[in-house]
Image 1 (spheres, one colour):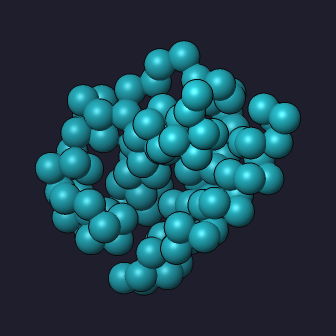
Image 2 (tube, helix red, strand yellow; image 1 turned 180 degrees about the vertical axis):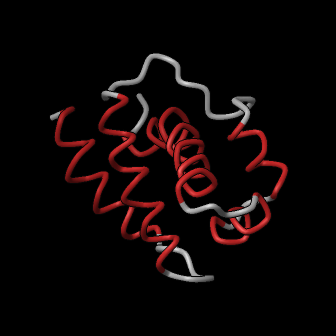
Image 3 (tube, one colour; image 1 turned 120 degrees about the vertical axis):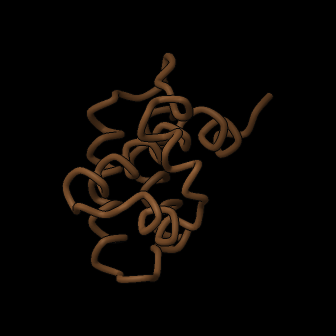
Length: 104
């Protein structure tokens, strides 16, 4: 039996990272290098997220529209935070409210 957080990390986080990277490049006009620095990942990973080599959508336990909403909120925070990035506590709180509530 997988704990909910494990399933989210394996199944949902790659999709969210992909959506966030795309949002930052498209709507905030950031380079892949800047996105990588702000997200704490490599430029190669950003490129793979943007071009669909990572974070492909499989069957997900929540709607894509909810993930897009979450990614948009997270991208906005990353863009406004300058060089810093929102902590994992923000994601965990959001997840507990929005994602895990549906499984209960």
